[in-house]
Length: 505
Image (tube, rainbow, N blue to C red; front, side, top):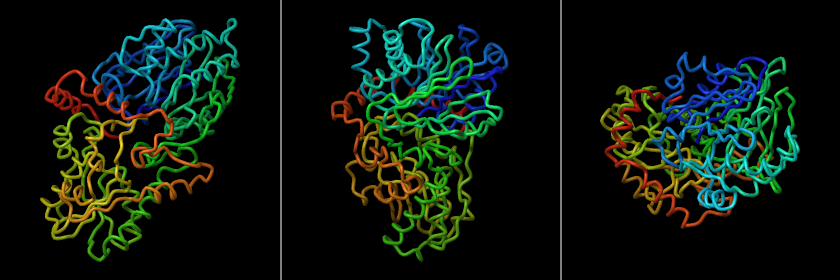
């Protein structure tokens, strides 16, 4: 999960990209980067940390130009602590390309060997983004007949990229002296949309519609799965379908957790999707236990609020805010190490005793991934005086690794893997546990856009739509994860330092 943005304008774009990245900060809190282009010269600054900490006035002044792109990073592949792997990535041959990427290539290791043995290109990091930019550069070189590149040649190269890479990817790239290129994987797993300024002279591409609206752009549409969009330096927009058999399967976890509620992704309001999930969760709860046993419904901030509100309304119980959130602590979901997550929960949330004392409370969370956070929160509710503590998840049990850009690659980390409902309930210490039904979730979210025929929901249903994921891949990813530099104690120390400068959008 990362947030990406690209802009082409008649005005300097450095501040505009910075503002868009702030609006996408929730998609990545590990690193940030911006590149701009003036003529054919690139100007880049990137570093570990939040947007507001990475870019100072002196950095912004050193980013001239009317076209550029940016990224906020949350690492799912490669070395999570390497500043070298912060994006954007740059290659100087054949044309000078800078690229940002949201997603995860499932065949990156095989491609890395191909690039060295066949394409004669060297990869210097463990990042799949470096693999992707070199694949694109190689295919552009093969497609080019002469300079300047034509849109047809660019689209031919993107088509070849689709043939070679597998996995999830939303990409924005700058081609020096030519313009801005964006494309999306043939399943449309990772989101990408574009909009224009009021006078039509400025085009912005971004991971979520909130980045367009928050910077004064009018949302035009989502980039279709497999489609490429090219905006030349003179502002002319060209688009073409470059995949052979594109089928839209957006990532369900975007609606459950990742995206901001005020975004619209592939024609579906994230907020409305979460309301709908709350309604089906209420139906599930009613079939499991009498609502009369519940005194109050309390969300676990932030993503679960719409679902909790709708559930409370459906069962006729009061909705209350029982936790105050410290916005200056990063998302525990993406922190390394169980001990770090456990400590950060207490730093991140504080219970309001008045809402818990002597009551039977239903806690609603957007999902339960590792169970560490849920266990700690249930204990906090008891310490605040709750009589009974029930837990409900607006998402189904997370049973399977996700290989498409969400940081849950090993089954051992997933509380719902190979455990019964009773074992999960006992582990987190709740008096009752209610999960969303996977088919009901797909139905009520899909109903918001009938043109969507399915979702990428592999972490819930175990179906990997790219068809190239095996048990051996899981083992390889587990080994890669274990090989990250530094032991658990080092990771914990790094996280404590990071908490001082991170916040949760």
